[in-house]
Image (cartoon, rainbow, N blue to C red; front, side, top):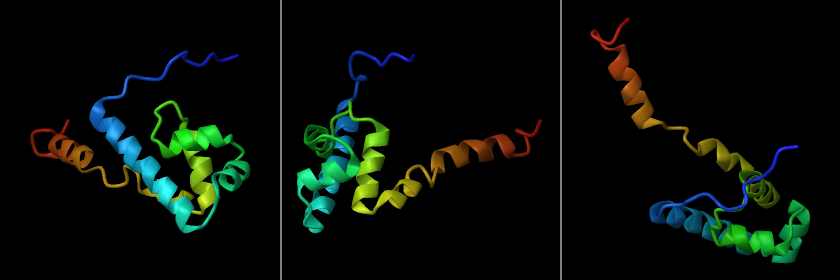
Length: 103
C-alpha cells in the first residue's frame, strides 16, 4: 500500500498564480456550458468541495482529478498542449548536438 504525503507540496507564488489561473479557466469553461458545480462533480466522480478546490487552484488537487474535470467539460485533449513546445529543452539538446557536443 502506497501512503500519500500528509501535506501539499511547497508551491512558489508564481506557480500558485498559474494554478489559480488554470482553476479560473476551468470555472469559466463550466459556466459557459451552464453546468452547476453539482453536475460537474457528479459526472467527474468527485465531491463539490474538490471541484471548488480545483477551480480555486488548490495545489493539493491531483492531476488525475484535474483530468477528470477536463474530460467532464469535454476539453481533456487540451492536456496534449502542455509541455508540447519545449523550447528550452530543444535548445539544450541542440547545444549538445553541435560540432563540439558530438560524442
